Image (cartoon, rainbow, N blue to C red):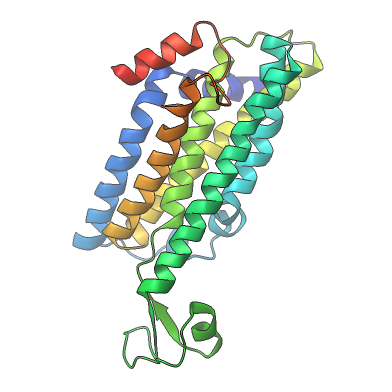
Length: 262
């Protein structure tokens, strides 16, 4: 338990800072551009992380929204109820997960449609020999073809959105004080560690995507959609009265508005 407490203290001191919420979006955008330029100008040698079947990609990134949703659900419920004691407010705040699910669904569906309508089926990965009889990606792959269209990076989008959403929700920890002997303290500490490590995985895999996969334009659009999803909610809509609202904390609304104005 002592090791868990140390990890939680480190993560709270790192991820809960206002500076992290302010500069992480810029850091993600800059690292995406830098990684993409590195991929184009001086590609890194193949490694375990450049294999799409690596453990982090298969069991974490492919299920990024499921991991984020399942860990934020109890975290938001416990911390928000501990601070406010109002079940109605907790339910309202939990609706942020429904909003996030809608953003994830709409964006991934949009990306899929864009790839479909801009793509064609080819006989080889070298894009030789168009197979006009196959009009969909699924049909093309089923017949041994290779589909090529404008494939906006879903990884860049989702990892950006998930990392920023977790950091925003962890801001509630500024006001959370619990008795170390209470089971609530153990539950929140465990969730802080889990969410902290999940955030580091998302950022790390975002960097791997930048240096190993997709074209610059595909990653640019993916990252922009992630940033727009985050800013459109936490930076704009959640500041309004008729919204899920921001994480409760002392003078939270004023602090948040100031941080986005600077």
